[in-house]
Length: 120
Image 1: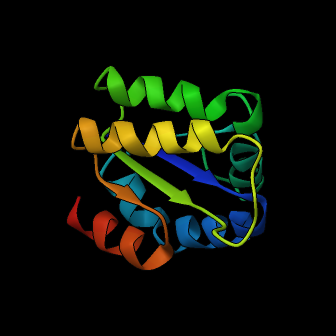
Image 2 (image 1 turned 90 degrees about the horizontal axis):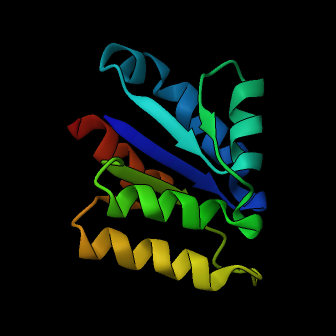
């Protein structure tokens, strides 16, 4: 299973912590991770393997949305910062809409992501 991970700047540390807490489960289930560029670099620095796409504002959110539409990504974990404005919000909303269109589980906070990961 392929899981996309994305985190806004204020949530990147939370994403790394979440993945480290679930590292053994991800490995045991053979889950492959994909991410936007900057999130992926933080995850790689923590010692995890991830395929990185472009940074979100440079098109990474759209690249991941395309993978959702193609049926390649089975889950999206996107730790959004709801208190900040983001210049690429149209891409973010497109990704979230496509998760709904293609019935792909989407978690936007650690509590929901934990429930989804445990269900894999």
